[in-house]
Length: 90
Image 1 (spheres, rainbow, N blue to C red):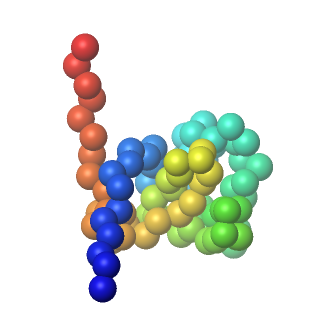
Image 2 (image 1 turned 90 degrees about the horizontal axis):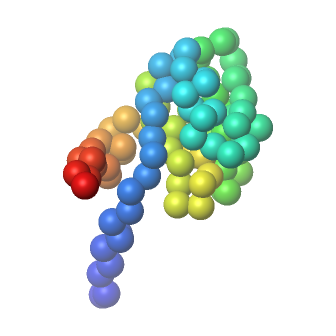
Image 3 (image 1 turned 30 degrees about the horizontal axis):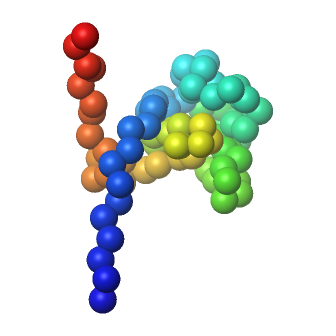
């Protein structure tokens, strides 16, 4: 059976702590239009993704995808999938 490897891609991501909506909104051209609080303040976010609405909980990562779209990612999946990128020195 053929095997495939995910292409390396750099993304912007912020870990949501329940209070940093401004930092998250700054990553997206649509601002908070695609992201709205749900449940008790600081507990959940509803995020309109390309696949439909998804829920993020405090501690999840909010990622800006390759097309500029927001989507949530659980911490264990984020750690298994992404690693920090060192700043290039010019």
